[in-house]
Length: 301
Image 1 (cartoon, rainbow, N blue to C red):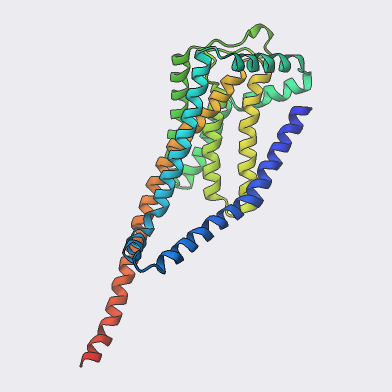
Image 2: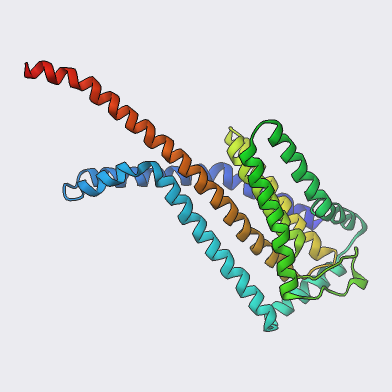
């Protein structure tokens, strides 16, 4: 059960990193930001610039979300287009890797492992993922989290449409299904299971990060969802219905679409929060000016 041991190790590695390392990284970023702000305050020539930054401080999370989202989108788009170009040019390295993994999985199949991956691929299929999305949407609507519901619905449904468009664009044939454990329909690149699992489970990860309070449970949920997405992609290679490059392309395209929709939603959210924060700061400034005004009058009299 090497595959099961591998997935278990991946889960604990991701959980450990998220639980132990991520808070430290966030603390380092905050410390650096505080040091930069302190340094700017001590520079007289930079005082006007720092004043403008203080005025726009409410919108700095929006700028950060835009910058981070753009970087991930560019990186994933570059990875996907490079892989697609390699397949179009019949890159020998990619073809040898695809063939080697396909033959290795075919030779190492066992009844227990096949049953495990059939279950995993069923969970990651259209019925399984559709039922999961429908259940979460029902919970969100019942709790009046309509914006989260719209985010999940647009992200998941848009991913399905995008996957079909990419399949019909690249028109790549599947491996020989005569030796596959399951049947499959449609074109091969990118893998629909891998792409939709990345999108849907990634969107659920975002919602889990927003809704779970305690970091221990939050990091465990994120690690579990990421491990499940990886397992779904692995199941397609093991069952013989996809090449490894199909799954890699599905992960890349899924992360690209997930980042685009999540960044768009986060920009909308941060803009609204920035407006609310600016309004509060202006109201506080007006209250302080009104409180100071009587003392000024008395001092002049």
